[in-house]
Length: 54
Image (cartoon, rainbow, N blue to C red):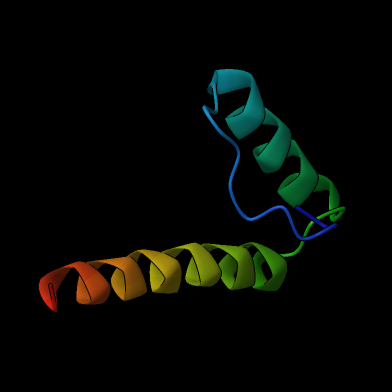
């Protein structure tokens, strides 16, 4: 996530545990996590808007 990977596909429990550990240790900040989550959310919204225009 630090390198800008906003989304892990398909993602698994171990990925979630890694993210939680990184948050606990300070290797990943909540601000960084929120930034990545926001980019994924905005990408989904953009896709939905484009689909609705068709």
